[in-house]
Image 1 (tube, rainbow, N blue to C red):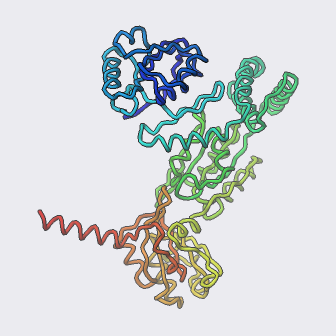
Image 2: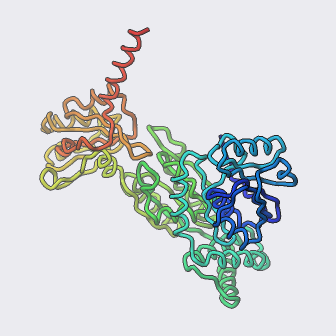
Image 3: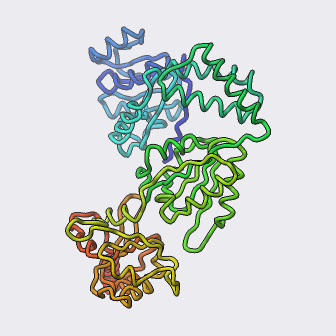
Length: 480
């Protein structure tokens, strides 16, 4: 069931709470800041609820619920200690088209109570559709901790600022940019500005736009999204996404990251995967330049780190050549994180004192990979984008003198930070990976660190998983 979070104005609306205990009191406290005309009906009323009702001029009727109590009611809360009474209230409300919340019975509700954050005009409702109130409460606590203490004053100020901005800035896009910048500044400084400072900032903004009216160029941020789970992005990268007016993003970006972009943000997918390109690199460069010249903040969101085989420097060079301001925000790269999630450190004081990252997609018949030099290295070898050429990589290293018994692993990372892994040696890793049908994107690790994997690490051996799957299928067929 999908609970859409409508924000309904209940000021002056008639609401009924059936019940006088702890839960009813909790519901009452949640509703108080929103100005509804509330009535509590219960044969027994707790001292806490009675005191709250007296303090807030809430009508309390000390008797059992009667169907006539629902006359002229907009919404009702069934929160008594008697489940049968609650179900009856719910049934009557649904018959009469009255919104009803029945405690501890999601199926009997026409609306549910979210975990609420309320600070002045700011209301944030968090719901897990009843799956886990504890998760909703935890998120509520986290959100409440980052709300500025002066949020009510900030929202009042920003509300008054809108007509002023409209009077002085005719262009809608520039007016939106000014309001966004002022909102960001107020939130960062936990403060509002007096009339003199407000007009000064408005004049600075309009003067700057007037001078650059024929060539308003925005800014580009090359942001590393990290790899796998969305919360691996840096705080700086997350702030950039939230500020973006245009978001140009790659494949393999955790969906949760895109939800942090504003509703007005233009989102453009330019992903590349396994030879399937929605845009070639030259087209992406041209798109970045075009969007930057249209103004605003353009965020180029790239999986992992933009400067680790991400062509980030190519994009930066193209932008700089056009005189466009561009900055780089690092990301957690898969060459370190994905093996780590599988329990494999790329370095180890007693085993490997260095690691080397190589792009593997040029391995087939290419002279760009110097297998002779790689085979002589004592450190860990990490190949990115090389699953399709795993046979050539393994054979190339062995031909160059690398011991065929050298441990090797192929690891695929998931968006939940879990991994699927195939382990073997240089001599058999390609066959094992093919048999397991492990998918791209995958990281190939070659070196003694592969054997450091701890049994306590949560990961899946794809080869073993598929063996178990085949055995189960054979068993099922025998039963049939």
